Every structure is written in structure tokens, then in C-alpha cells.
Length: 86
Image 1 (cartoon, rainbow, N blue to C red):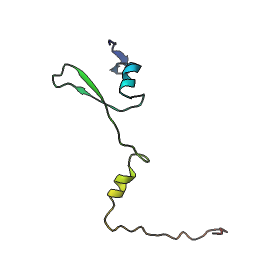
Image 2: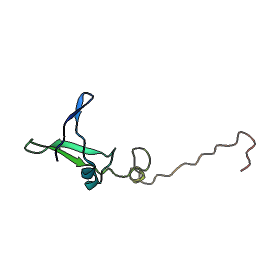
Image 3: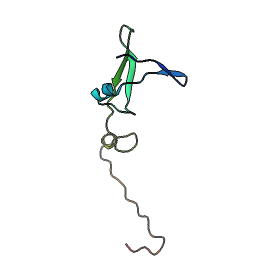
């Protein structure tokens, strides 16, 4: 498979064929690691399988594991400010 380097802003880019991406189960927006082979004679593009995130950048499992032992959540009474009926 042969392709051509193309200008992309101040960089150069290579388009990856759909069949190649499908074989690696990649799609637009996927994260990849780019580097050189040990002999520095080829470019290596490797998929990065990111862990699933619950919200934002953190997983709930990691946040819970970082909590101090014996942690007790404190309650808070907001009170009322109007005619709420609870």
C-alpha cells in the first residue's frame, strides 16, 4: 500500500485507508501512539486502548480507591428558603 505525505498546516500528514483502520478497529478520533522502530527506519503507529471513563478524565473506581480508609461522608442540612413542601 503506497500513499503520499501531504501538507497539513505546519506539519505533514498521511491518510490511512479505511480497510487498514477497520482491521485495527480504529475510527476517526481514536488515540494512537506514534514512534520510530528501534532501527529508526520506519514509523510505527500503534492503537492506544484508553480505559473507559465515567465522566471527564477520571474513573469512579480510581476515585473511590484514592479515598482515605474510614472516610465518612458528612451530611449537610440546606434548610428551606421558600414554601417548599418536602
